Image (cartoon, rainbow over all chains, first blue to last red):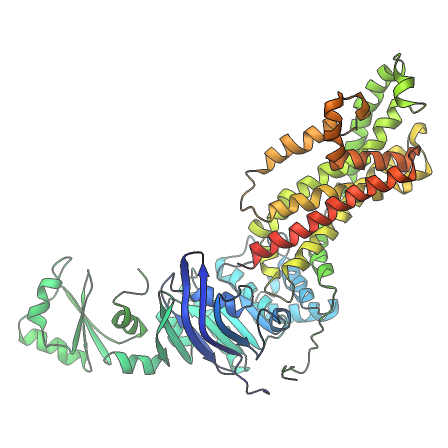
Length: 310
Length: 272
């Protein structure tokens, strides 16, 4: 008990919809102040897990405690301390931006005055003060997302749930959002984030689990997962569509491990440049070659045999 | 206790939750309340001028009028039914498109349940909104009826509450249905085969004793007939307390069953 209690603890969590098992027995624990990520492709069970944590969807089996409370019995109390940014913006199209925030604040039983003060403060935080009286519809995708984030903060949540916060946004809008989320983390709010972008997970998460088909297949810090599961660097070579697989015997031994994708080969090693030199020594000339640092994408590929974004 | 309260902001948990839901609808509605009020006056006025006066002229001079309507003019007979029929039309639409909006288009209901609000709060909050809409409608009818000698009675002050009850007897069950829908495909059929027939057979245009005997029981189980009779009696009198209690009872039964069903379909929809 007390402020060091883990905000989210789940064990053997299962969510079924009829015959379909969306979440298949996962164990999670999120530490206070931590930014915790669920990384996985579409359909991995991330959103179903988030909805269970958000106390809007009861688990089919297993136990879940949020702030030490039972989401089914104490959903109201738990949600009072939580902020939710859903995958698709659920902004109220009938209302203005400011009304969206104020009405939402009233749902948390803030007084009119407190809701108004907080709404204005938050619009400033997400740099949308000049849009306060605009309807929601004319806003850009990035602006709507920022309104969603501002709205989720109206009750000063202890726990913030962000479901794919930057999906569909252009790179610039993503960076603005990341910056805001980073500031929130600095202030001590616990964040639970789902994403299918490896760079987002690396940017935002202290710790994450990799999900595939309803199960957790790996867990750790972004850097920890990379160093545990893959080599430091990757040499990506392309020999032309359909020819990559036939080149595998010739490049054998160049890296420590080879992944074959339809459009390219990935050769993992601790020194990508050395691997490239080895290719040249063998007089193998690919159409293109690229050395890069390994990422969570590579971890995912190794663990599941599939790419994250298809 | 285990709950960690951050300083600076108090989080009270009160039973005012449904009112919060209602206030969301009010925030949207108050921008257009005057145009809605204007509509609530013009619509019954048109019905009255078109049907009440025109047919009234025929009926009141007809040979059977005295037997059927007693000493009530056809104008007063039809006009008082408008409290019930107008509320039925307004709330049916509000319970269909106006409610699907919160699930599908504005996402208002979906967003609400990520806050301390529950699906039951949403259902009760919507019921409050419907009641307010029906009251607007009833007040509009009362204002119109106050213009005419035949219907200028003190009961006009009471009849808008008859509108609320009749409107809810339609709005709440229909909203329960809406809660289970993802599109509005079924709504026109509800209007065409549910609401309009009741309008025709529910005792608004003539006493149901004029219907063939086998059709009269159908009127008894429709909420509209009870609403029409209740509102008419509130203005014109002439109904026994026992009959009034019966009409009230039936309408309240439709309301409570409707609200109960709403809490079920809303929860199933929002808590999957």
